[in-house]
Image (cartoon, rainbow, N blue to C red; front, side):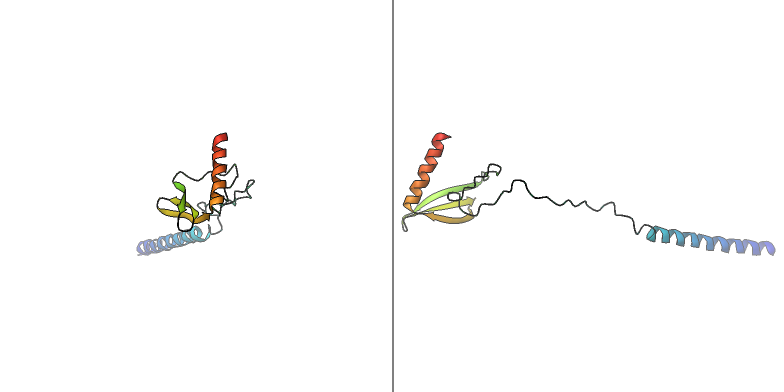
Length: 127
């Protein structure tokens, strides 16, 4: 009888001990690492001020060409055209990507167009 009681008490003690061990282990695993840094958070680096600021061009390519030597030229798929409108007598400057307008069209008079062509031909001659 003492042996059976001893084995039953030992089994209860083992069961209670295992339960306490698991409870303390779970609590330590959950709450013990609450103040540790997450190793998977991305490092955020704030960009500094550019030493050579590149300003975007808001006008057309004729009156506002943007002469910054560090700025890249427009890509090859941007087509720049000058068309004559006989109804108004003005020249229409357009910039498109495919069939879509890249920037809104602007207009030149005949005199402005002649000055533009003269500058363009002079530039082509000396290049």
